Length: 303
Ligand SMILES: C[S@@+](CC[C@H](N)C(=O)[O-])C[C@H]1O[C@@H](n2cnc3c(N)ncnc32)[C@H](O)[C@@H]1O
Image (cartoon, rainbow, N blue to C red):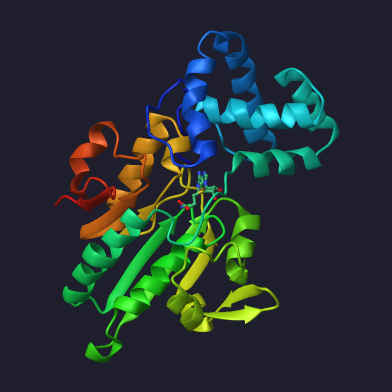
């Protein structure tokens, strides 16, 4: 049976945010404090409708994220209330796709947050390599358009000494957004999108293609993309590292805890978990992981 998140649209999250989009998420908590009661009912029933009609489950997302993102759709369709917007959805089914696109926030970049990738390069990957793992299994959960798993693949290839023994490397990259996954699979990025990559690596792992940059098969081949919903689908298993960055911040504490429990189950003994800059294991899940690097948000499975 599907795991259902609590319909708890409470105002949570005192996180430090990273992008402008994420910063607004936290400020919204204050702004909507007084006016929220009226809108909450409408918001809950709209999210119920979206789930019922299309199976998009955004019921565990923070109210601030939903309010802000829905506000854009309401303005775009020239309506004032959630009830009017529900009518728009009834009359124009393509609006569901636009809403889904607005609710899944695909902001990402190569080597996003250098502190985190430094911890991967200097702590996690050397630990996995010296442990003598012949099969290194990594999960990039909420991978958006692929920059995150491809960055990990580049680091791995740079760190691995392929001569020292047979290695099988697999990076599973998942997201709920099929359009983002489609782009990710293409492995084609604009000049702006590859700006965060060291020039030597850009030259080594990409082929210039009419103003864009195409990843070489040696990197692309290490990553498998799959649709997966972190809130309702079961986690994977026997993993050495889970990277889930900038997804938890959009969710309420209950689904956040469920996801972190899922990562605990997914990891091998001593496996690593890398979260986003503004994310930490919440509530009871704090006991499941030891913090290895507070700044990088790097954790290791207890037990
Ligand atoms: C802000 S992006 C983060 C991308 C990347 N991890 C990073 O930090 O650069 C958040 C991604 O999480 C995905 N996402 C949101 N809710 C999800 C869920 N329930 N299951 C899987 N992916 C989800 C969105 O579609 C989006 O691509």
